[in-house]
Structure formats: C-alpha cells, structure tokens
Image (tube, rainbow, N blue to C red):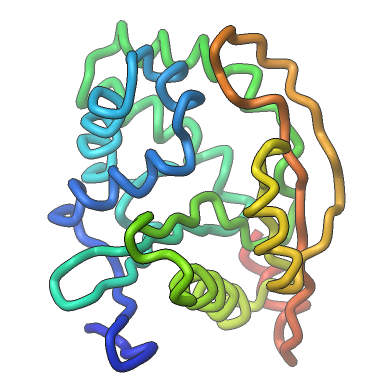
Length: 224
C-alpha cells in the first residue's frame, strides 16, 4: 500500500520487481567503491549486480529492508535501514546472495575486497542503522530525501530503538550538511584502512540522532 507523503510523492515497501530502478539508486551512494567491491569498470556492470542482489533476501541491499519514494509508477528514491544487530548477519547474507546469483568464485572475491569494510565502526548496539539513502538526480531538492529519512526514523521509533545512526563518506560534504540539518550530529570520524587506487572513499563520519518516544529505550534492547 502507498502512503501519501504529499500530493505527488508516495512511500511504499519495495518488492523484487523494483530491482531495476532501486539498483540505479543504490549505485548513486556506492559509485567507485561499489565498482571496486564487485570488480566492475563502471555504472552499468555494478548496477546490474545490484539489480540481481536486490531480489534476494536477508542482506544489506535486499528489497526487504527497502522503502521507496514513488511518483506515479516511477521510483524516485530509496532508503534501506535495519537494526544494527542485523548488520553482521546481513553482511554474510550479501556474500551468500552473491554466491547464488554470481557464483562462489565471485562471492569470495567480493569477500576479499570488502573485508576491511566489515570491521569499520559504523554502528553500535541498539541502533537503527540507515545503510542507504538516495534520490534520483532529476528529482532532488524536492524534500524526498527528508521524507525517506523521516520514514526510517518512524520505523525505528515503532520498533523501540532510541537512536538512528548512519555513515557519510568524508568527501560528501553535501550529504553531511543535509544530515546536520535533519538533526544528526557527528559521533566519530573514521579513516578507512581500505587501500584501493581509483576509489573515491577515504572514510566516513558516523552520525547519530536520538529519537524521542515513550518506548524507544526498551523495545530496541529486547530486539537485540
């Protein structure tokens, strides 16, 4: 069901059939880092892989953790979020999804190249982690990103989590300003140990936002 967020933009849960447009949006946040992890030379190849993986369950880029912004039938934005306690399982799930869709040899290569990322301090216990937030370039500056982020925070409150957290790449100053305006503050500045020539990724700002709500300090702990 679509819940209207404005007269033009609605929000709904994703399905496997949304893989094409969702993959293109996910690529907007991954860019050269995604190319490196999946050993691709650019947008087309990496987006194709994201599209295949999006259809699978129980991993970081799955449809089941995704909420879409839609205008008519067009998908114009995406947010992917989950409890921080699920991140480890979702990381393993990503490798299994790669094995099913791309073969074990490719999955092992993904594991090797992404190993330094697995130990980065992007989330802490009892947080709701926003892994992906992207808006189609042609639809930006319309408040769609704020709508998607607010919906992720709503999900966190309803699940009883006291904090939303996310990571912003160090070079992405526009995103840093956006999240600051949305009530997030820097909790940590981390410089990555990943060494990959040509990858525009040097680390991230870990950002957090406390969530007001009468149940936010109890339910989340029970779900850990």
